[in-house]
Length: 330
Image (cartoon, rainbow, N blue to C red; front, top):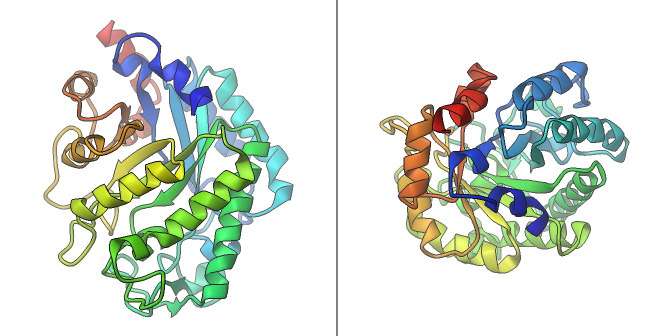
């Protein structure tokens, strides 16, 4: 954790040293998930000047059956490491730290995308994709755990500063955590602790593959905002377990059907989630969600709502947002 957080912790608790660019899918990879010039140019443009402390690279699939959409980045093969290294180098040259988000789509994909029937914890409809998946076997779950570990190893070999495990927005780990999509009766279903067993197994595999000092982030869908889904009480239990398992930072989001949740508006609309989670863990917590104003971000930090502020869509729309935000606060 220290390698990542030291530059973020220097100086006062301000947006200038606490700004995170969260993952925003560009769909600029080639059909096989490989890095393209368009991706390198995109991240070069967004990070120029080093005003963003930490850049989280868009979700990248850990195996072919975990691919979510066309032109998604891949972390599923060793041959990808040199090109991924060019991406890490590009961002480092601009003065920012960077981690890569790794993911398995589960049932939040299509047969057209992956060439086979989508899988999930249980054969129930995914509220986001409406796909009814094939239920994963224990042996297949073991393969997915191994795939996450191998993907994390590649991220480290490519020179990134950490890796983020994706468990939000209706993808596989969100599907296991959520009672909406997990009706299993084995060790991976039932109570909160059983529904996060896959997370804990993956964290262990990632830690084993990357070593004790490599930062592990976890993107947590802390509430499904749907009746019968994940609640903040579930996530408080999960957050404690994730910290104990070795997660370095919790990157909090919400919404099973996407990070834009009907009825949630305003600057930092997931703040009630991060504020609650901060009370039960000692590791840093990232707040994202609707933040477009630098002063609002400063106030969220000052009020103790989070330790780091994620600004996605504003930077996606305006590559100079971070520069102007930092200058306005000075």
